[in-house]
Image (tube, rainbow, N blue to C red; front, top):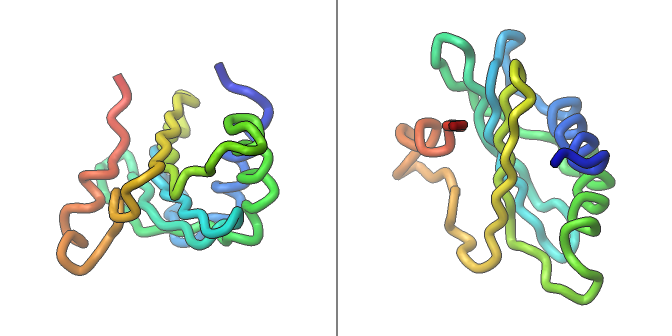
Length: 126
């Protein structure tokens, strides 16, 4: 079920995203958290022909939406996730959000996986 905070999160990620071509169809973006704030974002958009483009959303631009989304998902005294992955299909509106609570290296893009990371993060909606 899509809530208003989910819609606001998706909208903020897209509105503050840089690096995407106009014709992107799907999106995978990782939001890393540090001390209750957005530390960084990184990910990829995918065009209809399968090309991937590296993207990021401005942390200060998405912070209010991220905080509202997390407040809806986590109790005030509950530990926050280290990061989360947002995947979205622009044509269908289908999305998925996956939280990572313990593994800081999950979804990390490094020189060692720069060639495979776009495919590993690519949304595969059923």
